[in-house]
Length: 238
Image 1: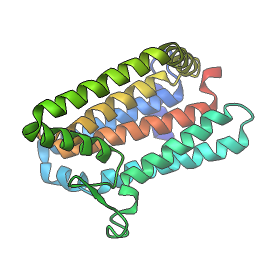
Image 2 (image 1 turned 180 degrees about the horizontal axis):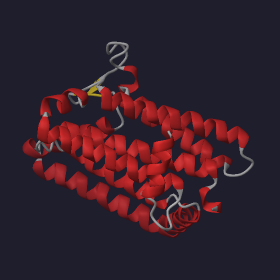
Image 3 (image 1 turned 180 degrees about the vertical axis):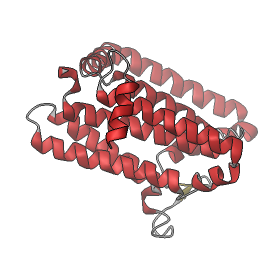
């Protein structure tokens, strides 16, 4: 522990607090492990990145831990109660999604399929829509394009009507995250989730794609934990 803190002091970057430096080191270590195993022993990399493997379990554990920490801070802190409550819900949803909402634990007893897709995760909903579009556009191209056009127009109209409200909420969220020094975590989380879910939904089978997906999710989970810790520690106050 002593050497770890000493290492953080050596690696200290001006303007970054302890939580930010720790998260930076966390990402660096994960990247080093990924590329090290990729170059030396890809079989181990594939084994730890598989379903219910070390990486997925670590991600689930971090999300559950983040949710528990958020719940405790909800009762302890006098401020930011709504934020901690929201983070606890997000953490629990993320944890349940990682463990497929108990699908493998209950051996698929209560899960169902929609258009050939087993619904055991949030991302599966997007996969259902993608499958529907792929299937129908082959046999009913004009009808499918027509429906998509109508849905697109409805969404645009709805967004245009609510644009001021959305813009105001977005501005407040960005201002809050900036003031609390957690905006960087959310940007990393968003980027990691975007790439990992794109690989999953669109079946982008690049080299070690499953390992890339799982490591990105682990990085995102760490960012979520860092966000909760930062708010709990009050890093924005210095």
